[in-house]
Image (cartoon, rainbow, N blue to C red; front, side):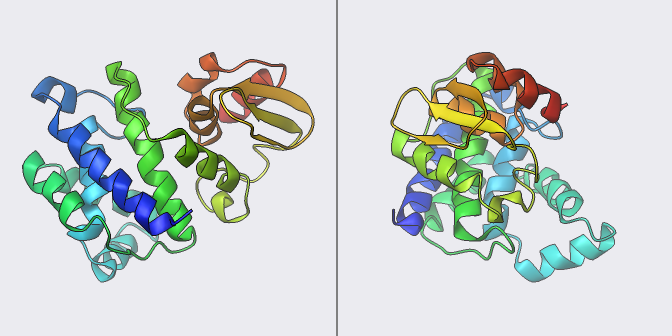
Amino acid sequence: MDVTARTAANRRLLADFFDSLDEGQLEAQSLCSAWTVREVLGHSAMPFSVGIGRLLWRTLLAGGSIDRAAASIAEEQAQRPVAELTGLLRTYAEKRVPAPGVGPMGQFTDHCIHLRDCARPLGLDADVPLEDWREVLDWLPTKQASLGVVPKGRLDGLALRATDQDWSWGSGEDVAGASEALAMALSGRSVALADLDGPGVATLRERLG
C-alpha cells in the first residue's frame, strides 16, 4: 500500500464527510469521549495549522502530556469555520506530517478510526474502503501501535478474525466480526463490541473497562 496516497484519499473523504453535516450533527458527541464531532474535525485538521514546535510547547505546558495538549488544541481549532478546516484537509491532503512514535501508519489509522468515531454515533455509513481496514488491522497488533493506540497486553490470548475478508491474527479465544468493528474495538471503542462474536469478546470487554 502507498500509505501517503491512501492517507491523502482519506483526508479528502473526511473533508467531504464533515462538509455534509448540519450544525446538530457537528455538535453531537463522538466516540472520542472528550470531543464532539466538530472537535474531531479540529483534531484532524490540526497538523496543518499547528506546527510541531507549537505542539511540543503546548505539551510542555500540559505537564508533558501530548494527549492533553492535542485535546486542548483540537477544541480551539474547532472554533474555526468548518469550511476553513475542511479546506485545510483538502489543500494539504498529500502533505507528510511528522507523527512521533506511530509514524505514517499511525496517522493513516487515525483518519480511518476518527471517520467512524463520528459516523457511528450519527448512524451514518460513511467509511473507508475495506482494503484500508486490512492495513489498519495488520498494523494494530504491532509494537509501534502499542505507543498509545493499542496498549500492551490488550490482545494477549486472543484470536482475531475478520468475517468480511480473509484476515486473521493471533491464537486463543476467538473474536470475530467485520473489519471495521474489529479495528474500532481494538483501538478502544467499546461500542463496537456489540458487533463482534466469540468467547474472546468478554475478555476484550473487560480489558477495555
